[in-house]
Structures are given as C-alpha cells and as structure tokens.
Image 1 (tube, rainbow, N blue to C red):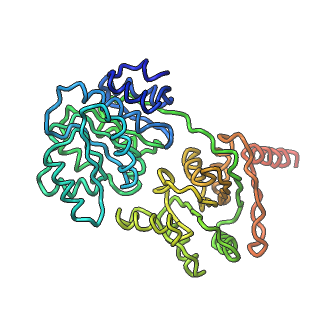
Image 2 (image 1 turned 30 degrees about the vertical axis):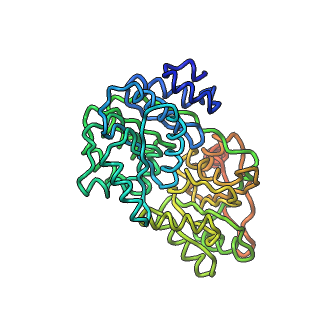
Image 3 (image 1 turned 60 degrees about the vertical axis):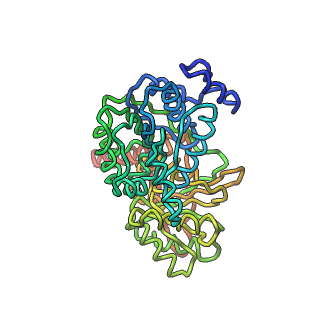
Length: 402
C-alpha cells in the first residue's frame, strides 16, 4: 500500500514525498488506519520494521489538523533509552518539517543545562514529548509538568522498558493522564507481563501482530548439548585462548548474568554486565564502554536483545535457551550486521532440548550441534521429541514381549 492511499493530510504526504517515502511497511499499513480511527492499539513488531513512523505519522497528522489545546502537552512518547529517544526525535523533526507541530526530547544526562532546557520546554508546552521514563518522572516530581490535556500516550519497545524495571515509573505517569486519552503500545514480543500492562492501561485495543522474520542466513548458528554441571567449564574453555573484539552473552536471569560475569572476571577478561539491577545511567555507561571497545564481552539479560545499535558484534552466546522463538531471533540478530559475518551459539541442557526443538521447527532447520571442548568431557545425546517417542515405544514393546 502507498502512503497516498491512507487518509493523511496533504502537507504530511508532501513531506513523505520529499523524504521519498512511498510504500508502507506491513506494520505501517496495519496500524496507521487504526490510530487514525482513534482506537487504542497494541502492536507486536520487530525493530527495523518501520514502527516509529507507524505511530508518529498518524499522531502528527491528527495534531496538524488543529483542535488540540495550545501551549499544552498533547502527546507523550515513552522510550526505554536515551539513544532511542534521540532517534525518535530525529524522525519527528523530519516528518513534521512542513507541519506546525512542536516536539521536545526529554532524556537523562549529566548536563544541568540540558535539564533546564527541558524544564523550560515542558513549561511552555510541546505537542509531542519524547521521553525516557526516569527523566520524565524527575520533571514530573518537581511539580511543573501538566499531563492533564494529553490526547496520545505511546509506549515504544514496551517489553524492553519492563525488562529495564520501568513498570512503576510508567504506572506513575499513567496516573497523571486523562482517562480519555488514546493509548498506543508497540512491543517486539508479547510476554505475559506485557499483556498484563496492556490490560491495565489500554481500552478495547486493536491487536496487530506481525510474524517474526527468520534470522539472516549469514549468521552461523550452532549449539552445545551439555549436562548442566559442565556449563562453567564450557564458558572457560571458549575464552581461554582467544576473545573476539565484541561478544554478547545472553541469559534469561540476572542471577546467571552475574554468575557468568564472575567466571570471566576470574579469567581476567574485559567483561561488563547488563541487567535491571543497574539504573539507567549505569546501563548507558556500560553500553558506551562496550561500543567504544573498553569492554569486549557483555553479559546481559534480554534487556539489550532489542534496540542495540552496534554493527561489529561477531559472536552471540545464548547461555540458556531463550523462552521462545521471537527472543531467540532478537538475540542472535545482534550479530552479522552491516554485511559482517557472525556466529550464534546456544547452550542446550537436557531439560531444554524440547524448547530448543521448538526453535528449530520455527527456523525450519536443524541447528548444527558442535562437539564440547575436549577438557569438558562428553555431553548427552540430543534427542528430538520424535526420537524420544520412538525410544519410549521401543522400550514399551520390549517390556510387552518379555
């Protein structure tokens, strides 16, 4: 579908034409009409699918038609990180170039002048406020921010915000919003906690879910099949001789992240950890060190499986099998970007073999099972459910015959 086929204002279509935006992406085609119609929305879409334009364009379109309070905050866009807030703000500036729609980005930093500039803009009112939760709460708590006239409340990368521990901040902001607002939520995945949040803050939402695309073929995918007790030895064996320039090790729990970090630090490796126990400034500091090469191994929860903009990650390790196929794809797609090659290795213990097979079925391929390092010893056999069922039937038949 072309943007010209949507019910958008001429000025906005002129802007899109100048930017050479012609064809809608699937997420834009499905969500823009819903937002223009005034419905609450929950959309599940991966990073890189054009979701920022999917919510900015209809909001800019509606605000440009007038009828909204002057010198007031009419829309709040929440983003989990300063980097994403900046990206959204840049797109906002581009899309609103020919429109009389104002915006301000509100995010953290050590610059007191920046805080004062944000305070001034919030006091004067801006049509669209693009903010990280922590910094917006800081302004809100000082008593000069008025959210009573907000018409649009948008959560971008909602699952990531919850992973980063922002649920309480989000709910505090919601308390200051009018009931009559339109709420729009975008998330890369739909875990139970996102569904619970949606049930709390959305009203009869339209649900849009785009199928997760399979990872790039240039990612070499492999797996270690191991006994749980062998896990620390495998990690040590992997990094004893050589460490690539940038490696991410994902784990589903912050306890395991801390455990792996301890192992690698004992090996005197240059490692950092990322999880929800760190506040936003600490997380941003770790990411900056990783980007700049001061840290070359990052051990993290899924807090960084989406939205991380680093092109030269050469190896991704899943320290445990991700909870679903979507999380697996998001994790391993951190590698093999910008025409680089990349490797993704997943640790699969006996209990997680069925879960890993579900991922293989989604990918429609058998992931290569690599031999464990010699010093670790032999691991268990990888048995698919079909194979396990066949073995159980053989045993049952044997017992019957004997």
